[in-house]
Amino acid sequence: MKLKEILNVFEEQAPFSLQESYDNSGIQYGNPEQEVKRGLVCIDITEPIVEEAISKGCDLIISHHPLIFKGLKSLDGSHYTQRALIKAIKNDICLVSVHTNLDSVLAGVNQKLALKIGLEDLKILDTRRGLLKKLVVFCPTDQAEMVRNAIFAAGAGQIGEYDCCSFNLEGTGSFKGGDNTNPFVGAKGEVHFEKEVRIETILPGYLQGKVLKAMIDAHPYEEVAYDLYPLDNTFDKTGMGMVGQLPQPMEEAAFLAMLGDELGCPAIRHSPFVGKSISKVAVCGGSGSFLRDKAMAAGADAFVTADVKYHDFFDVEGVMLLADVGHYESEQFTKEILYEIVTEKFTNFALLISDQSSNPVRYFK
Image (tube, rainbow, N blue to C red; front, side, top):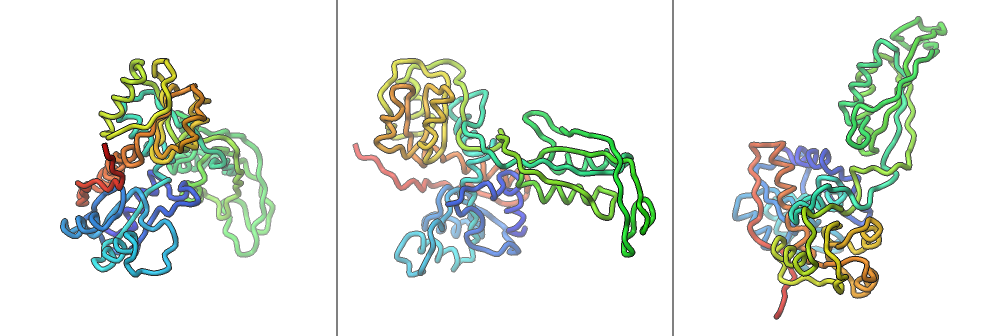
C-alpha cells in the first residue's frame, strides 16, 4: 500500500485543511508514493516509540502529536525530536501525524473522550464558521436529477441530520458557441435558448474539489456555468470541544472519582466545588482551557480538559467545576480512533497500537 492511500483515508475522515494554523499535521517524513506494509499507532513519536516500531517490523508510525512542531535548524541529536527523527530516517520509517484536524471533527478526539466518561446527546461545543459554501449550477432540465445525485454523492447537500438538500428553480438559459465548440444542444454560431434548472446546495469548503469534479463529470455541457458563494453559517460537524449529558446526575466528588477511574488519572487538579450536582458536561482533549467561557455559556456543570493555568481556575467563578485531568490522559484514546479509521478502510493492512505510554508527566506523592 502506498503512503498516500493512508493520507487519503485521514483526509476523508478529518481533512487536513481543518488543522489549526500553528499545527503541522500530515507527513513528517516519507514520500507519498512510498510503499508501506506495517504501521504503529501512538500519541507521541519518541525514541522508544521508534525503537518499538523497528522491533515490530513497522515502516510507518501514525501519531496524534506531530514530531516536528517547530523549525529544525540542525540534526545533531541534541534534542529528543532530532534523535527520534534521525532514527526514523535511518530505518526508513515514514511518519504521519493527525492532530488538530482530528480534534475538529465530530467523530474525533473529543467525541471519544466524551463517550469514555459516559456522556450522551453529544454536540460540538464551539462550532466553526466560514467553512460552508453555496454552490449554484445551471443544468438542462432533463439532466438535472443526474447532476444533483452526483453532487450529493460527493458530499454536498447536508444540513444537520438532513442530506440531499437543494433548492431548484426552473428558467431559461441562453448561449452561443464559438467556432471551436461542440455544444450539447443548439448549433455553434447561433444563439440558443434552453430550459434549465438552477440547482442550489451547500457544501463544506474542504469538499469543494471533490464536489466540483463530480458535478462537471456528470454535467452534459461542454462548459459548466456555476457559482460558489462563501457563507458565514456555523457548521455543526466541525469545531472544538464537546458537550453532553451524564445518564444520571453525580455529586462533584463522585464525578471526579469517576474521571480518575475511567481515564486512569494519578491526580486531578480542579476548581473549588460549586455545591451542585453534575449533569451537563463539556470536554476538550488536550489544552482546552480557552473554551472555558464557551462551556459556561453552554450551561455546563463541569468542564473536563487539561493544561489549565492558575488564573483559569479563578475564571470559572463558582459557576462550574473545572477539572484538569492531564494532557495525555485526556487524549490517550486517540490511538483507538487512528486505528479504527485505517483498519475499517483497509482490513488487510497490518496496523498495531503501541503498547507503551509516551506521557512525560510524573507525579510524586
